Length: 485
Image (tube, rainbow, N blue to C red; front, side, top):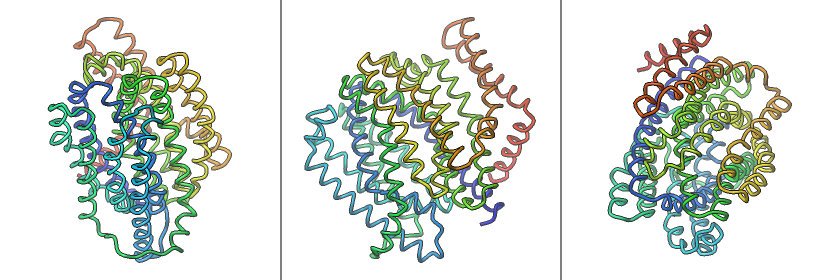
């Protein structure tokens, strides 16, 4: 695949991935807005606990095979399909094995995560494990070929399912069961659609030698996934022990809401970037340029979004969650600000390690972050929930420092260029932030808040477009996307 063809595939993939995420970020917040007004924070706390368990088990069912299939260069289609079959049957078998283990120790697991009595709930919810494993290989092959159009239709069905399943069940009083049943139905729909539309179908083929070859790469991806899981979920585990379901639901729902808004950009770009970098792993010049182009575009949208949510956190909570979630504003604001910084400077470094075939570096980065993260969460939690929130949010800056060190001294990546690359977006976003703060002092009320947001957006893009390089690049992207449509 030449560079011109790769860029064309990236733009086409970005188009479909962006459409998917736009649909998700329009529908999902509406769904959450409705559910937040029906269900109490405690229900979301229960689901957060169950999701933590399922996501941990899911890592072992996948075993890093998805990343292997995207990153690896195969000599022909036959070899690719052989590896796909081995990955599929390994995933599928592991999912049933882990489901059985969880069922056997469900009561003990429920006690461990601070929710005794949820044993049956955990067993039922974990039916998602075989459902996820059934479609994970198809998903990897779609991403490898930049076929995000197929993924769009599968995601679209799962996005709209809550209106058919979850919300009606919540209305009749099923509580957290409504969320669990809705998620299971989404998994079933996803597995059916991806399998039907896939050119590759599972066949009765298995080879231990192929498995060994895959594990030499995938085992480090698995270790990486475990370390990432610890980074993402250690705070939930500590909250479930130190506090109650109310605070767990408050925290997890707030962070999920922020993550879902920021994921409008990250979810549409991360798999595309990894696929593109994997194809360019032996061409350092094109590799670096592709990374910088993507980082710059991401910063243009993520930085003002993070600062904007931080400034208007009360308005965000009123719109997205409702009046009974008032305390969530103190979480949403700080989480959005630190998330924006983390995404621009740290999030995509892991894609570089994996695309270079060096997932060990991502494992190292996560472990070095966990060394500080775990004690910070435990110690800050003893001083109260809100001290915990501040410490948990800002400790992520250490993860960025770790990535910077690895990128500079191990990958030999031009770190100074990585920082200067986003300066136009950062300067414009900070200027917008100061203006937004000033406008908030002039008046109050929802109407003025919306007016001031519009003023901030106009100022941001006016300031941003004063940089000639950014102006040329944005116009070029708009033209290419318009031609694709």
